[in-house]
Image 1: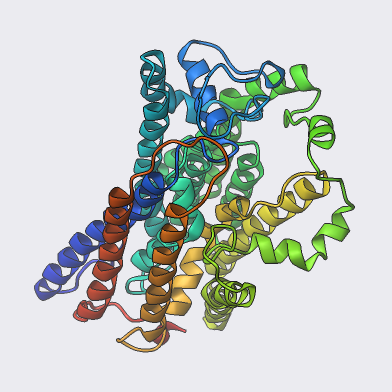
Image 2: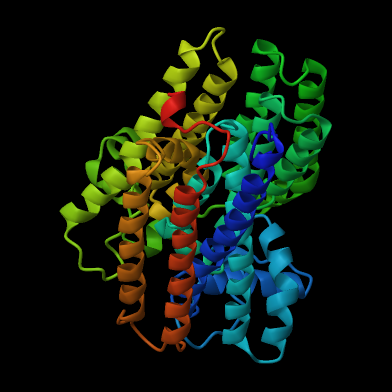
Amino acid sequence: MPYAQPTADRDVVPVLRARWWEHLALVLLGVGGPFAYAAASPVYSSGDEAAHVDYAYQVWHGTLPVFEKGLVLMNTVGAHPPVQWTAQHPPLTYVLLAPIVGPLVDAGYINAAAMAGRMLMVVLSVGLLYAVRAGANAMMPKVRHVGIAAAAVVGLSVWFVRLGGSVYNDMLAALLLATAFAAAVRLVKGLSGMRAAIVLVIAVAAASTTRLSSVPLAAVIVVLVLVSAALVRRPRPALAWWTAAAAGLAALASSGWFYLRNLEITGSISGGHPEWAADHTSRVARPPLEVAFDASFWAKMLQQFSIEDNGTHLPGTVIALANLLLFALPVAVGLVLVVARALRRRPVAWDDVLIASSAVGIAGGIAAMQVLHTAGGGSVLPRYFFAMIPFLAPYMAFALLRGGRLRPALLAWLAVRSVLLVIEVGATLSRDLYGAQARIFPVAAWVGVALALAGVGVVAAGVLRDRQSNLPSAASLS
């Protein structure tokens, strides 16, 4: 539940009003930024989008792609990969996309197929914000506005906007993992029982069929439930073990066959082709420790709330400072405050410590996987760090909600990111891309920006006006 039960009749109306404006804000933020990017960026202009659409098209015709066989999709604009370099991914995203893009490609509307696929990603983006809100409210049920603030943090992040407006498999993976995490938190906090366990099992199984990198992250979520059952007796140990076993078996049943297929075809479960990358790209393998201590690697990967590769013409120091103040600092402050609060309580709130530890563990796991990916000759793409934002956003929100009823930190954060969003969409519209490109839709892009800014306005107004709630603020609980 996002709010505690009201203690008197006078509390009912504010609670319902808060729910109404939060739903409005979630939809506006979930649609606005991704829709703006979908309209501003030509379809197939990235190196991967055609491969993702092709995967869905092949699924539509009852086959799975093979790396060496290349693409069946014959897009004449944008980038056309020489091989099918998304073939190593499990097929759930493409099963959802297939009935959308398949008929359009068959009818000859290849560009429209990609745009229709982008609209599905926009819908999934809204779902992700709801999952983040649910998880944050379950983590801190007594902290007013933490759920909507966490959702706003995610909804205004650079890669939420980009991935939500492109045909990739990241958004579905993020949605399912955030859903699994929210269900696990409800179990750990004692807010739900069997219903949350069932949601967790389904979400973990589905996440395993989106990306291989989702599997270890889902395992961390399941371990959180088991450790909590052992330490704080929530959930009941029997339910925890049933949930863990069911999640493992469901994941194995849903995706095991595909990873065995990867092993048979490519010789590895991941299905990667590092030898092809070494022969056809300028990237080289490096020792993992060299990557881990490479400052330029971290400067690039941490570009989650301001980015330099989109023609924004912002100085590098401004981008680094923006990501420090908008990302790294709120995460660190929020985690320290939440854990310190938990350790000061008597008895110690070990459930909060465990949840924070799992969020940090997930973020660390994502970082470690990217270090290894880069060390093996993979590209340095900050897109891959977006996967940690839904888990860290509640702690960012907790930090930003401090400062009294006027919420100055949150309002300043929203204002800065809103300005950067306008700059980033404008830069996307003005890009000079190589080769023939599909048309873009500037008016629609600015409509999307307006929707996102309206969502920001709803969040700001709701947080400032909702002062009658009987719940304490973040500052009073730290």
